[in-house]
Image 1 (cartoon, helix red, strand yellow):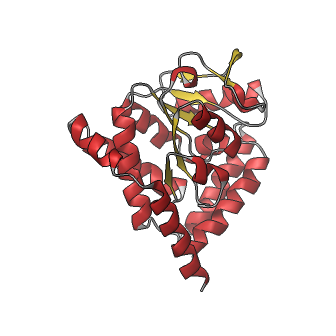
Image 2 (tube, helix red, strand yellow):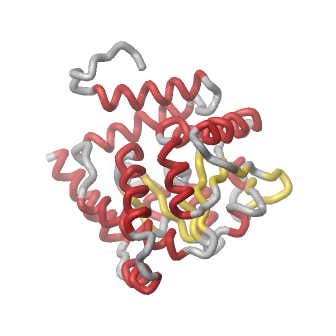
Length: 246
């Protein structure tokens, strides 16, 4: 952290910025991630910098779907690893879901650094992309996946996702759960379940929900998922942004 005092009105926001900068310094975050983070901050202002009802509802449905998945996978990029590594590990343990590194800008060194960073937070195993295993319908570095992870997943949790891979996964019949502060992005619009919230607020809530429903029967979780209306979540988020602007 910088020497910004806790009394500073933007302390929380500046703390997250410092985490991204530190991520660059230790080799897990791309400089491009700074731009992506700043874009997200702008949308966070517009939703009131709080977890709104539409996000809380999406979190409950997301956890229900992850709990009932055959092979859920948590797909992590540099920004996510820099901002919420402990929560990613906690969610992985709660769901018994593997963590897999997947980044847009190709760098084997950075992929390994992200895996090591997550292991320092307690992850036992972190899967890395296999250059021999690829997703269809995508040409970027995100096409490379691990055979025991994304290659056989039925539900993928992909916070801070790029739209191209989200579209590719959906076309392949995989359900995608994402956290995206921009309800108009390709990812938000194409995902199966979109949590329009700040990653740093949504992740602790996801972990808490995953632990709270650990003993809930699958029939109850499936009933909740069946009622999911992602278009309604997005519409509510857009309306909140309009209200914030006006």
